[in-house]
Amino acid sequence: MFSRIAKNYFPALVVAGVVFFAAVTGIYSRHFGQLAQIWPANALLLWLMITYSRFARASGWLGACTGYFLAGWVMNDTLIINVWLGAANLAGVGVGYILFKALKRDNEGLIGPKSVLYLLLICSGAAGASALVGTGLSKPIPGSTAWSRFILWFSSELNRHLVLLPVCFAGWEWFSKQRLSHWRSIFNIWKVNIAPAGSLAASVGLAAITGGPGAIAFPVPALLWCALSYTVLPLCLIVLVFNATVMGMVETGILHFDQMNQRTGVIVSFRLGLSFLVLGPLTVTAIMTTQRALVERLNQSVTWDSLTKVLSRQAYLEQSLSFIENGKQGHTPSIAILMLDIDHFKRINDTYGHFIGDSALVAVAEAMSSLLSEGQICGRLGGEEFALTLSGLTLEEAVCFAEKIRLAVEKISIPLNEDIFIQMTVSIGLAYHPFADDVRLRVLLAQADAALYQAKANGRNRVELSPFLSGQGKMNPSAVL
Image (cartoon, rainbow, N blue to C red):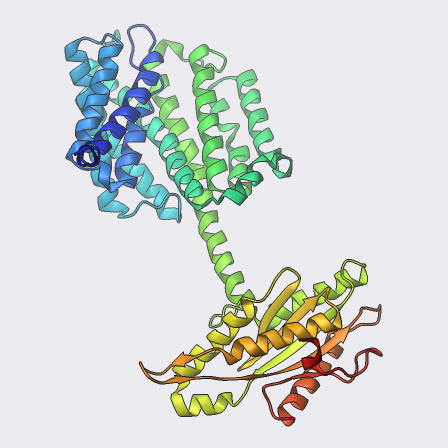
């Protein structure tokens, strides 16, 4: 019974709670006789409805109505004001939700340049609907018209949505990808480049000192620098802080304009200008996010073999060279190269088809990867040939590792159907060097390759050591097991 009630009413309670606390925060920001200067409730509610489909049901909307009404009641709003403000807020959120579903069709944040255009259209629709319903509540300013009151409300709502929604989307995406081990990186603030953010703070200070209508453009270069330097979430937070700071400076008179006799028009122009100003860095960071994703995919395709998910040939060679460089600096005492080839792989392909052959390659790669630890890498050199680089092992340990791989591959069974499975074996050649200044990767690869051919010549399914082991002498691999 209790679980059924919780399931049915939990979305309504969550939405009501979020809306209530956000609305109370906004109501506390009211100046005497005016509407709220800070109003996060609508943007948060719109994000909740977009991100969590279970909240966008009738119970969720009912919870939102309750949250708005309770906040107004607690803050002693009259009944007509409370109902009218709630209707205006819900109208904006509802239109924003409909536009988002019609335009974006997903809950991805600032990914791609079109996302900023969608964001502007959604926020404009939400702000317009809210202003249309709520304009009648605005106390007439001397000389004002219904249009001026509408545009004043619209500009405020548009600005709030444009700076809060990106933070919600970016924050949700960032937190959803974090693991417990990654949280320590949050405190590595000394590694963050603070120059772009510092230049933004300096430009805002310069704008306050200079004043005038052109001061609003001073932070533009710094905002673009921030957009090029930071990822999505930090940039969105910077834009939010920047927007709130400039708004506060204008409200307190620190940043002033000369046309104060036209206050309504100046405020509307300022808010719209600030709203469109923040679109610049948001657009840049959306484009940069797309480019970073493309570069990451390119690096992925260059670094990793697409079929077996081990290192590609070039990446394997580059990382093996770095192991050797570290060894020359005394960081690792030895290096071993294992060259591995699947026995009779052509027969597997010809008999069972390339699909089974690919399955065999993947199974062997997974078996090897499961045995790797720090200081050990595996790469596919081509076809059915793999290579492994092991650092910091003795010769006996390297031979033992090669035998573990050989035995692991022997246990692999590739299903052809419910009753028939195929097994396979590998031949392994091993080259070893205890590290001297004259060690060369090409030499070790050639020695391992020669040992591999010797293993095949001696009957396959075995580990063969290179005869050039820097005075270590020949060794029977089975003697170390």
